[in-house]
Length: 572
Image (cartoon, rainbow, N blue to C red; front, side):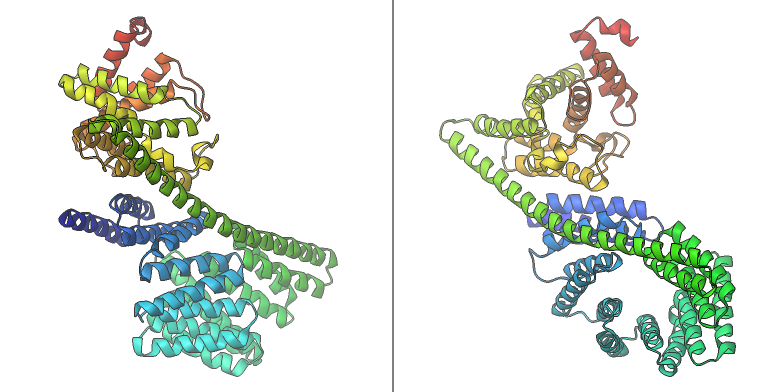
C-alpha cells in the first residue's frame, strides 16, 4: 500500500514539475498537466499534492487573465491546504487571493489575505520570497493611501531582501518607494531612490526599466530639472523600442505607465496640447487592454487637461466617464466580496455532500450486510441506490443506468468476451455515474453550457466513483470501479481524467463509453432534446477512431441493427 502511494505521489510530482516547466511558453499544456495532477492526487487522497495542483491551476488561470476562475481555484486551494500543516502552497494561495482582491480594488480583503499569506509563510521557515509578500502588502497600503505604513513595509522588505540577494525585488521596492516620495512632493529622496532602482533594474530586472524611468522623470520635473526628465523619457522610449525589436512582448501596463507619466508631466508643465495627445493615446491602449485602474487615472487627467485648455464640454465628458468607471470598479469589488462568501458556502456544501455520501454508503452497506450472505448482492443494491439518486438528481429516471448496463453487456458479447464477464459488466456498468452524487445541484441541473470550472467539477465524478467503488474488493466492484474511472477516456487520448489512449484504456471503460454516449443522446435531459435512434447511432459512428475504438463501434452498430432491423436501411 505504501509503495503504491509513493508511486502515485511520484506521478503527481512529475506532472506538477512538468506543468511548472512549460507554464510560460505553453500555458494550455501546463493547465492540462496541472489538472491531471489534481485528478490523480484527489483520487489517491494526496491532500497536499491536490492543494498544490489547485494552486498551480489558479496561478496559470490568473496568468491567462481569467480572474474569476483563478479566484475560485485559489479559494479551493486554501480550503484543501488548510486541512494539513502550514505550507508554502497555503501561503501562495492566500497571496494569490490577495492579488485578485487588490486588482479588483477590494483593498481590505486584499490586505487580509496578504497578511494571512505572510503569517503562513513565516511559519514554514522559508525566507527567500518573504520580501515579495511584504511588497504586496505595502502596495495595498499604498493604494489605500496609508503611505506611512506603505513606506515602513517597503523598507522592511528591503531589510529582508538584503542578506538574500533578491536584487530584482529590491528594484521593484525602491521604485515604489520613489513613487510614494514623489507623490508626496519629496522630490530629492524620490530622485535618489529612483536612480538606485534604475541601476538595479538594468542588471537584475530589465522589464522594470521603462516604468522606473518614467517615475524618475516625474521626480526630476518636481525639481524643475526638465532636461533630466526629458532624458529619462527618451531612455524609457528607447528601451521600449529596443525590447520590441528584440522580440520581447512588452506588457501593456509598461507602455501605459510611460505614456501616462508623459501626459502627467506635460500637464504639469503647462503643455496642454501635448498632454492631451499623450493621454488620448494612453486611453486608447487602456481601452483595448482593459486596464481599468489606469483608465480611471487617465480620465481624471484628461478632464483636468481639457479644463486647462478651456474645452469644458470635453472636460465634463471625461469627468463623467471617470465617475462611471469608479462606480463600475466599486460594484465589481462588491461582487467579488459576494463571490468570496458564495465560494466559501459552496466548499462547505461540497464537504457536507461528500460526508453524506460516505454515511449513506456505510449505512446502506451495513443494513444489507446483515441480510445477504453474498457480498456482491448487498453492495450492489446499496450502490445502485446511490446511482439512482444521482440520476434522479439530474432529472432522469433509473432507465439510463439499466440501459447502459444492458447495451455494454451486448457489445461485450458481440466482440466475443466470455459470458460470465459480459454479465458482470452488465451490473458493473450500471454504476458508471455513481460519483455524480457528490456534484452540486447548481452544476448537475444547469440547463445552459457549463463554465470551465463547472466542467472540471463534473469531471470529478469519475474520480469519486472509483473511490466509492474501490472500497469493495470483489471482481464485480473492481470492474465497476474501473468502468467508472475510465468511461470518459477517449481512444485518441483527449479524454479525462488521465488522458489515456488506445488499449491503455481498460476494456470496460471503452465499452461503457460507447453505451453511455449513445443512451445519453437517445434520452431526454434537462439540457438537451431526445435524439432519434438513427441520429444517435450516426453520432457514435462518427466518433470511431477519435472518441471510440473502431472495432467497438462496429460491434455497437451490429447490436443496434439486431435490436431494430429496420435501422439497417436507414443507416446505410
